[in-house]
Amino acid sequence: MNRRRRIYEGKAKILFEGPEPGTLVQYFKDDATAGNGAKHEVMDGKGVLNNRISEFVFSKLNALGIPTHFIRRINMREQLIKEVEIIPLEIIVRNVAAGSLVKRLGLEPGTQLPRSIIEFCYKDDALGDPMVSEEHITAFGWATPQELDDIMSLAIRVNDFLSGLFMGVGIQLVDFKIEVGRLYEGDLMRIVLADEISPDSCRLWDTKTRNKLDKDRFREDLGGVVDAYREVAQRLGILVEAE
Ligand code: C5P
Image (cartoon, rainbow, N blue to C red; front, side, top):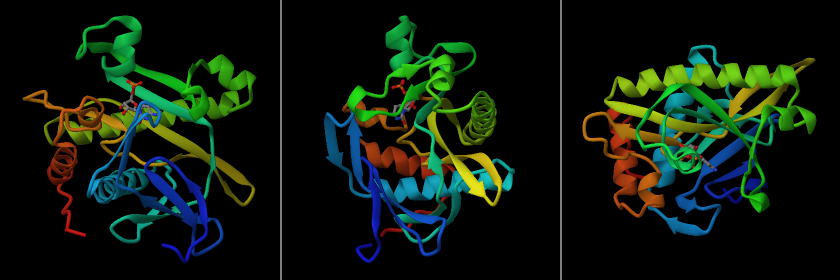
């Protein structure tokens, strides 16, 4: 990985220059962070599992015609992706009350929401990713009204697919976060799914036991983080070899 030029390093991933113009290599680290980096730990094998789980989900989305940046997995920790212009938003989709929604509105954790709810946060570490409205997004030009429509329909399609996928393996999709970008192909530009979808970015509860199989195990010091991620991979039928 040293041979490649490093474009960007985030908390859990690194982006390197790709082999061809318009491509990048996304490298999954073992780092886990919470509270905007306040809590940090290295968890052996987490990056390998997230690479595999994200590959699995993005390949299925591509096959369904839901556009993503994913091209193919290169090795245990890296995937080849299309270079996109990231829109500075975190798009959160919620089906069940948990996390910051519970704190904000005083809801009982685990309450089924009347319908799926989409929230937006402005991606800015220094500000702690504040929640923003559609008005902010269009007024500040982070996305046009048309792009925002495309983002919301993409988010709903991803939610429908993911909910069914996880339900089939005895897991409830409580909520998740996605990121999107603009992909330029010739004169055309379209909004595509970027970043990753993994137990780092989703809340996943075992349907029967209500056991948490996601990053909340790290946030809440429950232990067994990597085992929970491996459980998700195994249920999805992803064979995870030792690195
Ligand atoms: O903390 P909150 O309840 O707002 O998180 C909602 C969902 O978004 C959770 O699945 C969480 O894992 C995900 N999330 C994320 N990255 C963030 C904030 C939230 O993946 N920076």
